[in-house]
Structure formats: structure tokens, C-alpha cells
Amino acid sequence: MTHKPASDRYEHMPYIASGDSGLKIPRISMGLWHNFGEADNPIKAREILLHAFDRGVTYFDLANNYGPPPGSAETFFGAFLKQDLSKHRDELLIATKAGHAMWEGPYGDGSSRKNLMASLNQSLKRLQLDYVDIFYSHRYDTETPLEETLQALVDIVRSGKALYIGLSKYPPKQATEAYAFLRSNGCPCVIQQDRYSLLSRKVEQGVLDTAAENGVGFCAFSPLAQGLLTDRYLDGIPADARMNKSPFLKQTDLSKEKLHALQQLSQHAAQRGQKLSQMALAWLLHDARVSTVLIGSSSVQQLSENLHCLENTHFEAEELNRIHQIIDPFAV
Ligand SMILES: NC(=O)c1ccc[n+]([C@@H]2O[C@H](COP(=O)([O-])OP(=O)(O)OC[C@H]3O[C@@H](n4cnc5c(N)ncnc54)[C@H](OP(=O)(O)O)[C@@H]3O)[C@@H](O)[C@H]2O)c1
Image (cartoon, rainbow, N blue to C red; front, top):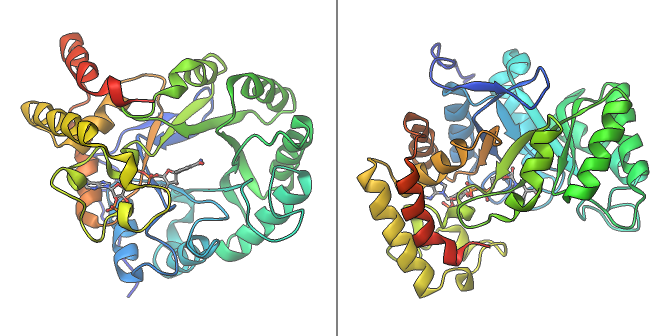
């Protein structure tokens, strides 16, 4: 049956402009990297997406290669949209990306014009859409002249296949050049996406400031360090956890010492009346340079818990010191 969306869905989610643009994005966005592929439970996946929409999450983040197998998250999301939210297309920000290995041969990887154009055409077919709201260059590619990538992005927007351009994982130097090129070609970059959490703080060395100084919004991906910054691993590794299923999170990512620090952090979160996941997201959102946190979820319960982080994003300086004392030795 087609879903009837919650009538109060816009009452609890704050939206802010992404950088200097007119595009309003929700403070919490939903990513489909894991849990929405062919191997995942489609009933559960649908419930998660509907819950997100019902709570005001308007931004859904995909990429050509999300699955597994690659492409299957887009196929799933396209069918989901058609069945459940076809009347609500204009309430949604749908993003996809190209730039990582996707198909065989010399054109299935990288950020050449050939790859970006072909990949977006494939994504639109899988998504059953005429356009995406944000098309990202998934990574800076040292083998392609930056100007070729950027001109392709400008042309994609001019073709109507994407409304806005985003960049993902661009180092500050290339990001600065890209922001200037895109702006001078009438197609300013609306958002930069990179890994950022209490455990991954490399973006503090230039990426965040460069985006802010150029009026570009910032989207923090893997804000829960793929589940490490939640209760998921505090008492052992559950059989169905990402650490047991995905090559992107390994048991070696969780030393005894890190686990102990996470347990301490969880106790600190409890003193704030929050779960560890809620405090980890609130910590990101209290930084004015962060426009949105891009979370993943394998259940409605996780998503629901995470959305409640919005209720307290305030930190006293003393409290921040305590948090950093605990976790900084494990942050990269
Ligand atoms: N641009 C890029 O290169 C790039 C790279 C990576 C990600 N991204 C984007 O960022 C999105 C989010 O990444 P992510 O999935 O790594 O984000 P994340 O929010 O750091 O991790 C999500 C995982 O953490 C666990 N989790 C979440 N909430 C929980 C809770 N309340 N309690 C217990 N466990 C909880 C779940 O793992 P279990 O499965 O174990 O339950 C969930 O799948 C992706 O979907 C993608 O859109 C972009």
C-alpha cells in the first residue's frame, strides 16, 4: 500500500541554507551506503526511509556504487520512490555521485567527463528520475585535469540532469580551485561532503574552513564512525553489526583501549541525558560550519534514537574539554 506521510513531518526538523545558496537542507540527512542493497531486507529498508521522511529528513544520499552489488541501492530507492513517495518528489533532495570504481574498463572509474556523464545517465535510469537534486564528484581524481571534471559538472547542471553540484573528499587546495571555477561558471558548489566525527577529525585541518570561507555548505558523513560512536559495540560485537558484514569496518578498528574510551564517553553522554550516538551527532551540529550530519541506520529504532540528538546540541566549554580528553587519543 502507498504510504500516507505524517502530516507533522516538518515540525521537528530544522533546515538551514547550505552555505551561501538558497537550498535548505535538514540538519540530519539519510545515507544509503549500507543497508539498502540487494542483499538487505527490503521491508526493513522501506520502513527506515519512510520513518526518515515522516520525521522531516528530506535529503537522501546515494552514489552509483552503493549496494552491494553496486547500483542496487539506487535501484531499490527508485522503486521505493515510485511506490511510496511519487507525489512528494518536490519535497525531496536526492543526491548521487560518481568517481569510484563502478564498471569494467578504462571509463568505469575516476572523474573524467566520460565517466561522470555516463555514470549519471546510468544512475538516473536506476533511480527512475529525470534529474537529481545534487550530483557529487565523489572524489578528486589525480589522473584527470581538475578543469575537465568541473566543466563536466557545469554541463551536467546546464543539461538539467542535476540542479546543484557537490564535491566529496576534495583536499582544500583543489576544493578552493573548484569553488572558484564553479562559481565563475554560474554553477556554485552547494556542498562539500567529507568524513567527520569525534573519531575522524582530519577535516579540521582545512576542509571545514575552506568550505565555510567560500560559502559552501558542509555535510559530515559517517558521523557515528560507522557505529563505533553508538552503543552498538560497548558490550561486544553483535552478529548482525556492520563490523561483521562490511569490509569498511574491521575488528582491528576497535582496540581495547578505544572501547574503554567509548564506554567512558557513553557515561558522559548519559550525564547529559543522551545516548552516545546522540551526543556524537550533537557535537558535530554545535559547530556552525557543519550544515548537516549524514547518518546511516540499519533499523527504525536506530534512526529514531539518532533524530533525538536535535533536542540538545549545546556544550559547555568545560564539557568539551572532558570529551576531548577522553576521545582525542583515538581520533585521526
Ligand atoms: N562521500 C563518501 O565518500 C562517503 C563515504 C562514506 C559514507 N558516505 C555517506 O554517509 C552516509 C552515512 O555513512 P555511515 O553509514 O558510515 O554513517 P554512520 O552514521 O557513521 O554509521 C551508520 C551505522 O552505525 C550504526 N548505528 C547508527 N545509529 C545507531 C544507533 N543509534 N545505535 C547503534 N548503532 C547505530 C549502524 O550500524 P549497524 O549496521 O551495525 O547496525 C549504522 O548502519 C552513507 O550512507 C553515505 O551516504 C559518503
